[in-house]
Structures are given as C-alpha cells and as structure tokens.
Amino acid sequence: MELRAAAERAMTENLLPGPLVSTKWLAENLGERDLRILDCTTVQATSPEGGYVFEPGLKEWRAGHIPGAVFCDVLNELRDPDNPLPLMMPKPDAFARAMEALGVGEGTRVILYDRGANVWAARVWWSLRVFGFDNAAILDGGWRKWTGENRTVSTEASPRREARFQPRFRRRLLASKDEVLESVKNGGAALVHSLSREEFKGEVTRMPRPGRISSSVNIPAAALLDPVTNTYLPLSDIKARFERAGVFSAPRIITYCGGGVAACGNALALTLIGREDVAVYDGSLAEWTADPDAPMETG
Image (cartoon, rainbow, N blue to C red; front, side, top):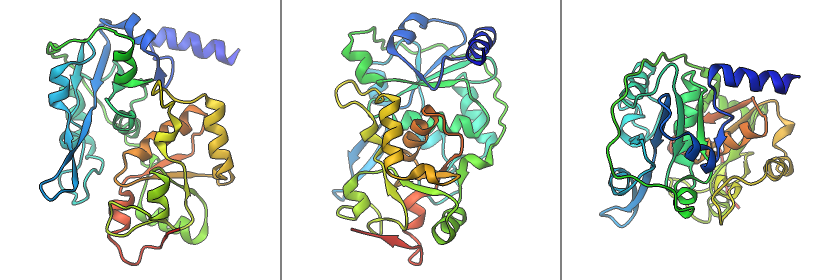
C-alpha cells in the first residue's frame, strides 16, 4: 500500500521516479515543459606547471548536448567565492540566483548529467538537496550511455525559462571539519573516503599531505559504476560494498574526497540504497590536509 501511495503521489505532484532516471525515460520525456536538463560537465586539463586543473565543460556543451540541456558551470557559479577552499557550497541566496538563471525552481523537474562518472552531476544533485530541492535526478549512464545508444544530440542553445527558487537550507546534509574531527576522536559517524585505493593508501596524492582521514574506510565512488555502461551497479552490489566496509555500524555516515565532488557520488549511492543519515564533508581533504595537526593515516 505504501508503494502504491508513493506512486500515486508522484503522478499527482509530477515527481521524478527516483534519484536516477534511465536514458529511455529521458528520451520519452524530452520536451516536457517542466523538465530542466543540466549538463554539469567539468573537464580535467593540464596546468602550466605540469599538474592538472579542472575547467568548465562549456566547449564540450557547445559541441553537442542532450536536446534542451543548458550548461551548468559548477566551478564558477555553484561555489562560495568568499571561501579560500576550492569548491565550498555557495550561500543560499547565491545558489538560488544560480538555479533561477538555469530555469530551476518550484514546479520543475531537474535531470543532471556530465561526460564522466557523473560525480559532477552528483555534486549538483546533492547541492539541490542541501538547499531543499528534491525533485532532481541523475541520468544513469550519463552522456556516455546517451551517445552510446545513438540518441539525439543538439548544438542549439536552449530557451531561457523563468523560475523562482526558494532555498531551504538543510544543515545536516553537510559535515564540518569539527564534526569530522569529533568522529575521529570519539566515533559517532563512519567516514568514507571516496577516491581511489592508491589515494586512500597515500601511494599517490593531489593534496599537501598524502593518505586518508584517520579511521576512515575506502569506497571509490567510480567503482560503483559499471565500466561498460557507466550506469550504477545493482543496488544489492552497492549495499554489499558498504556493508563489507562496516559503514552501517555507525548511526551517521560522512563521505569525503579531495574537494567534495566524488563524495557526492557516494552520497548518491547511499541514498539509492535507502540511507538517510548521510552527510558530505564539504571541505574534504582540501581543508583537512591544510591543517598539519589534523590526523591522517597511510598504508
């Protein structure tokens, strides 16, 4: 009865079917007036010093995108410019203005995708949740699956849509450095490192100090996707990976990565398997490793 009631509510309120939608679903619903499609592509490029930097994927969007999709500049429009850390959540009013410029607001349904492992799309999805907007979903498989199925691609600009976004900040969906430190010292939350095993062990690093936050476990967000289709693994497989890591023994789960992006991929995965007690450490290792006294482990 509960499932039936939820389905009837979704139909009445025009809600999305869940945190994920298939390429088939999107193809069947393209052109719906209340649908907003955001291309959240962010690309990795080589810096002049020989390292790497992230850049907005506007050029890629212009070369081709899902029909009706608008470009979402995660790096420049969805960060707090007053915070020295690279990608902290913007202030509520600034986030609302950015969403309204993209046509996102009350009465809209939002589909998000990118050209990689959908972690940038997940970052926007989680940001929407943080600010009280739940009628959003990730395109399962993203751009790779869409184009792999030879679905329609457009190079045309999308029409501007009017929208009114009312932010409702959910503080508990974000974890602070102090909360993470308290968890390291006294427990209370399972800490999930969302980058590669090599970064978890400190064999490679992009941060001032190598390794992981002490007491954390490693579940790479990218490993939760099928390498061929780029879609999420079966929910039973995702749940088993978190169970084996002992994540569910704590009353709260905090995901983190380098700058709060891959962490959102894991937060999405945990939401898919029904966990509500999840937060993203927004500062992640960018903040943690800058403090020489913040406890870390390697090996």
